[in-house]
Length: 315
Image (cartoon, rainbow, N blue to C red; front, top):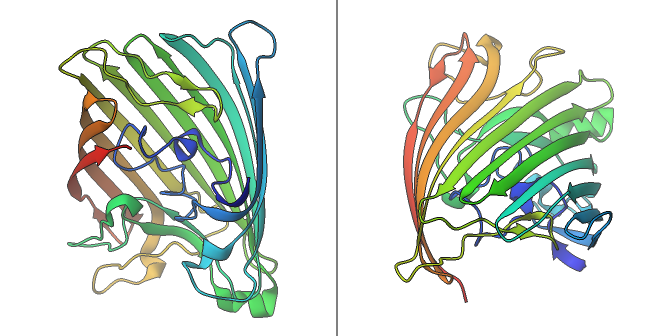
């Protein structure tokens, strides 16, 4: 592919908007630790074929892309480059059962006057109120290096390595993903972000979430009954700044009378429960409830709730 596409990151990131289990992708995708950087401009290659058995699938992909969106849309002349690779293997794939394991790696090198930021759902306004941005998710910055530092210290960069495990057996679907992201800049302390997500889903009407061999991810349910298909699902997301070298860039709108120096923890988590209804393969209704929790240590905690509803037509 040449032009705009997604780097080959998490399984949830690569899945189509038409197939995701919930309204929002998980915390190890661009919705979370990659700070909203989903589609990028570059060169992307993927390959897949059966490798060892009559029903397996081996997938490999690599990409090189511009960090144009890394600064949130600011129009700088140059904003750096990133590269990425992903390897996945499904030992067996059938219409009613499959298994998947994968790994992915990304390296983003920001250019002068740009910013490398790791942002994880779910908060951007810590306190009585919070910001929930629909499909973009609500945010709290777990770690970042500012653009002003690049002029004096050189360009920041970040490395991320992730693992994927997923599978379906009849109406049961399970998925787990983990990403460790490190942010680096010469002259400043390195910081690390750990994030993971666990998903479970069950098709009440008996359908199976099939496997997408071309992209090494999952597909949506296809109703096998005249009245459609129903699916219930739950997910737990968690991400944290490990504070391995002190508080590097964890920020939030802390309560009155406190400062960022009071931030002795920097972690967020979400529990999401949802129900999906598929009247036919082209229409879907999604209802999600999410309970979030932000823990900033001495600076306080926050636990917002949200309800989301989506009606979808695919054509």
